[in-house]
Amino acid sequence: QQQVKQSPQSLIVQKGGIPIINCAYENTAFDYFPWYQQFPGKGPALLIAIRPDVSEKKEGRFTISFNKSAKQFSLHIMDSQPGDSATYFCAASMVYTGNQFYFGTGTSLTVIP
Amino acid sequence: DGGITQSPKYLFRKEGQNVTLSCEQNLNHDAMYWYRQDPGQGLRLIYYSQIVNDFQKGDIAEGYSVSREKKESFPLTVTSAQKNPTAFYLCASSKGGRVRSYNEQFFGPGTRLTVL
Image 1 (cartoon, rainbow over the protein chains, first blue to last red):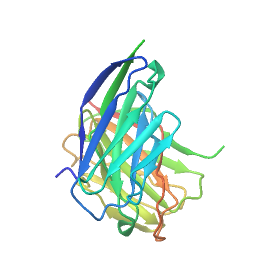
Image 2: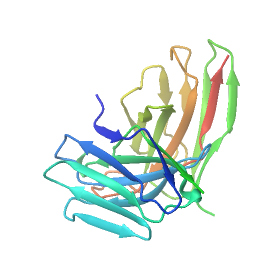
Image 3: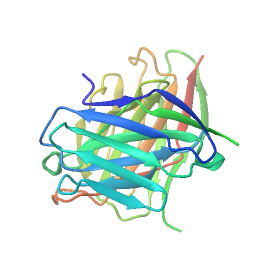
Image 4: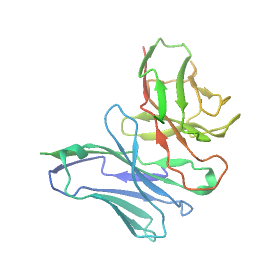
């Protein structure tokens, strides 16, 4: 059973566009929601993370929007660049489970020059 | 230069052989994790360890074994009982341990295992 559902599976945008990746969860005990970026053949790296006490967090061109009532959160990439082409994973965890992360299935993003 | 190292980067084994993947971290983290990554399935947790000499099964532990004899090392053995072992294996660590806190997981570069 997938604890975190992620969509779309793949996404192609033009340079400068704003790709949006969505994630949904069921377990209301989740209290930490990170996004990871992974380039081919590499391990994932933390991009940005949010806790449920805020509805939005921005770091540079990356923004997380969080809707607690809908149990959804999304990643927006402003002014996307070809260098942003990568696979993006959302995740969720709860502090009570010793930091066990539940990952979405990933979104492959391609930014066309 | 702190980080997580996994070796080797590529590994080939014959079907029926056990193989051990190495994971070492010098971040002084208490918690370590093993994930398996397959196309379209994201990262699935195999085993995790919050402290030395203690580890728990993740969602897909069957056919795998681990040990945690040292804080900095968390090797994963893929046994012959694992029916479909060909995959990309990722090791991660976090400050974690038994302290309740929000901790980023840091990932190693991965090992791609191919069973022939």
